[in-house]
Amino acid sequence: MAAITLIEAVNAAMAYELDNDPDVVLFGEDVGKNGGVFRATDGLQKKFGKERVIDTPLAESMIAGLAVGMAAQGMKPIAEMQFMGFIFPAVDQIFCHAARLRHRTRGRITQPMVIRAPYGGGIHAPEHHSESTEALFSHIPGLKVVIPSNPSRAYGLMLAAIRDPDPVIFLEPKRVYRIVKHEVEDNGEEYPLEACFVDREGSDITLISWGAMMHETLQAAEKLAAEGIDAEVIDVATVSPIDMDTILESVEKTGRACIIQEAPKSGSVGSEIAAEIAEKGILNLLAPIGRVSGYDTVMPYYRLEKQYMPTVDRILDEVRTIMEYK
Picture 1 (cartoon, rainbow, N blue to C red):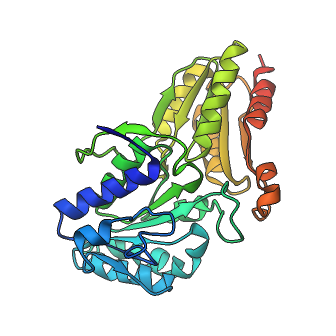
Picture 2 (cartoon, rainbow, N blue to C red; picture 1 turned 30 degrees about the vertical axis):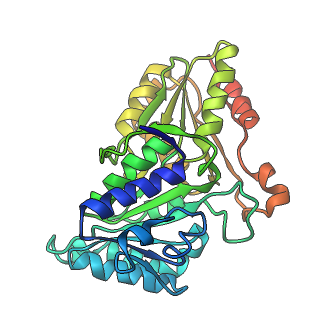
C-alpha cells in the first residue's frame, strides 16, 4: 500500500482497468506520448500501447463521438477533455447521444463510457480553464456526474465509473491533484457511485460539499469545533444522482445545513440540495439553509481568483449566522 496523490490515484485506477479488461481504451489530446497536460495518463501508452492509449486531434466533439460509438459496440472508452472549459463542443454528443441511447433503444444499447475532465479553479489558469459547471451535466437524465475529493475516492470511484453500464462524467478537481496523499491499495476495489460519504460526524450542523471544497469544509469544521460547534461533514461525491437519503438523515439529526460549493450560486447543484432539504426535511430544520458559493459571474483571472472562491472564513461566517437561530 502506497501513499499517492489524487492524480496518481486516477492513473492507477485507469491502469488497473486497462490491465484487467481488454475492452477498456483511453484517448484524448496529449494523453499518450505526453501523459496528459497534468500527467494523469503518464506512462500508460508505454505500458499498454498506442492501440489502447490513443492521442487524438484537438477536436472535443470528435473525442466524445468516438466514445459514443465505441461504447455502443461494447467497448469501455475513457475519453479525456483537457479542461472542463473545453467540453462544450462535445455537449451535443454527450447530451443527445450518450445520455439517451439506453432510452432510445429501450435498453438494447448502453453507454459504458467515462468522460474525464480537470475541473475547477485555484491554479492561476486563463479563461475556460477554471469553470465549475457540474450543474449543466447533473441536469441531464442518463448521465452520472462524479467529483472525487481525495486520492482514495478518486481511485475507487474511477473504477466504478469505468465499470458502470451508463455514461459517467468524471470531474477531477485539479487544485487538489497533488496537495494531499492517501494510503491507497491498488487492489481493484471500487467505491459505490450514487453514495455520499460522511467524513466527520457531528450534532449541531451539517456541512455539505464535494470536490476541492471538501478541504476548506473540513478545515472549517475543525475551527468550529474549537468554538464548541459540532459539525457533521458530508462529501456528496456523486452530484448526479445525489444520495439525498444520507443528507436528509444527517439534517434530521443536526437540524441545520450549510452547502459549500465552488460553482456559481444560481441554478447550481447546491440549489438542488437546498430545495430537496426544504421539500423533504423542512420539519427538521431549526434555521434557514445556508449556502457558500462562487459568485454569479465568470471565473476571474488569477489576481481575483482567491476572492471568487469560497474560503474557510466565509464558511465560518455563514455557519455562525445559522447557529444564531435557536
